[in-house]
Image (cartoon, rainbow, N blue to C red; front, side, top):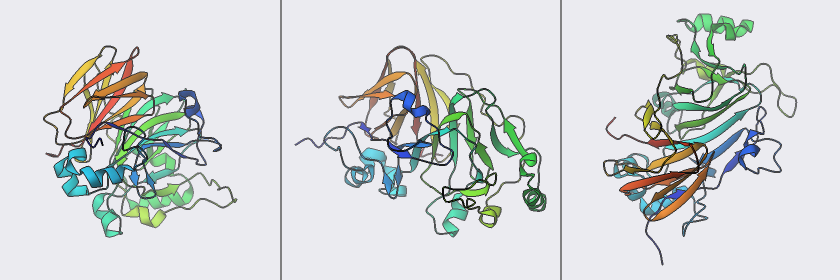
Length: 330
């Protein structure tokens, strides 16, 4: 019976939300009978929404169950020592047909004080941006809790917030504590800590399916908010090279790099003490490692085990992959 590890692919998890769109149908995802799919969870260890393996002899097992068996060989020794069988990252595709709520996430310290395992630092890679689509990231100027409360009470919160009109390929790093929101017409790949904790601070007086105003978390958010202003642009400036690797974000929770390519590539992974996830954000690609080939289209990802020594990347025409791992030296 086969028992050797190999790159793992996962079944998608679909989430219908009040602001969700239907762009994911264009990429071949079938989420019927849901009326929309605002969030596709491509790789998750969140309790109750654990990803199920789709390929190989481990198919139908959850990611958490695979980690329980293979431990550091799958995720990396230091990562397993820290997180156990909980995979530390959550990968999503978000399709916003309407504005998302203005929100903030706690950091690790605050989350743990409130009985949660960790906070939520995240990043967005913009895959599609309709003309005029905007997002919010942080404050226009340094403010404080009194000015914030007054603006919130008067319905003028947006006047305090920094907004931008992103384009496809833009990157936004959202550390815990930063007030933020995606606007309608945006589809992004989101990489974040494994946490589903969101403090909703303003929601345009929107009502849920039962006609009730959506719950706000005004007081819970106060201790989480970073009131410092965004200096300059909120997006991450970078220059990508075809058939090269460019770092988009690097923090203790994840490192994300962009690989745009149109010819086969081989990458050495021997210096990594971490799993590596490849997420397809454009085109059609395939990942080969440990004698296993995994095809990918937009919105799918593959988890390459930490014991893998190398990986080969292939594509049908130009493609783009996000390469994500944890730098345990940070």
